[in-house]
Amino acid sequence: NAGVTQTPKFRILKIGQSMTLQCTQDMNHNYMYWYRQDPGMGLKLIYYSVGAGITDKGEVPNGYNVSRSTTEDFPLRLELAAPSQTSVYFCASSSSTSGGAYNEQFFGPGTRLTVL
Amino acid sequence: EDKVVQSPLSLVVHEGDTVTLNCSYEVTNFRSLLWYKQEKKAPTFLFMLTSSGIEKKSGRLSSILDKKELFSILNITATQTGDSAVYLCAARLALDTGRRALTFGSGTRLQVQP
Image (cartoon, rainbow over all chains, first blue to last red; front, side):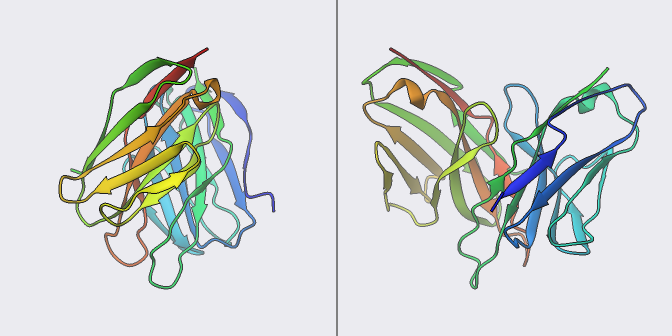
């Protein structure tokens, strides 16, 4: 299993440009998440999905959009990039078990985005 | 507002020392607390704690949760330079069926000097 993969690893955008951060997992996890991590800070949840076709906002969704057309893929879209979106973006996935007791999240390697 | 606070923010120790990292939380619908180690890139999972008073151990690392006082500690004994990392704790919420998001603290940066 490759686990959670993200592309690209690095990207520099100009203000106002758009881009899509790709995330794929091959563990058949139903839950997927997008986080951003600013320097010296913890992770903040942007969007999450509990299954194909279902997405919901997290803590900091403004300026982002997501879709979940398949179980494996959860792309994050930035429509009009702003300097405040300079950050490291992590995608994660987890599975639910009966009773919902265990929910370790597996993280991708991250995408470092700079908006100038 | 849900909040997870870690202390200290940073810590410098020498190899062989024992360290204790703290995590307190104020969240609604708390389910469990998770600890992650983050070196250069993605966080890697260490522990998940759901019940109070039950210590979890993995080698030199151990952790315990106190649900009455709303905090957890992560202990590292006989520290090594390879333990240098940012340690993140996160509270897992159960807001309604299917919502399993984590609220993260800002992390404790541990530096272990030879």
